[in-house]
Image (cartoon, rainbow, N blue to C red; front, side, top):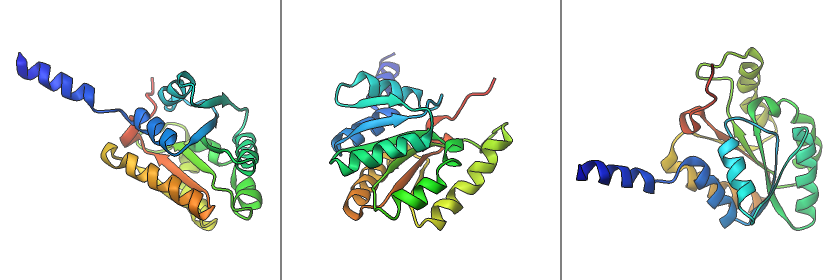
Length: 183
């Protein structure tokens, strides 16, 4: 009985992925969070809405959020875009024509779809092309699969993006988030 209680208390003490992301954003003064709604990111989005430190709001499209974050950076504010893999397909033009050449440290947090049991062929195609496009734009990107590495990767990536004035894509693998649950 006592061992079960200790195990339950131990499990409760371990933060989940979205709590780690929220605390790491906060610690790095990343407080403006536009997003395109996504089921996998829902716990993070809800936590951000609930925390008065953050200004969090939905946008109609990913390019809209990039424009907002570019303007915010130019005005001295840090932010991050939350989206899913399929939304990345709309971004190569704005990344290549605004973010990269203007050295805007855009932080993109992407819930990965298109892999590990995906049923939607469109998601799969974008998933297979996202990393090559990021590489072609010379954009730093990291795929996070493990809870024990999450805080370090996000924290260092934000610091590097700001210090080098270069964008970064932080891809949250279904191995980390549990992915989308299909009916």
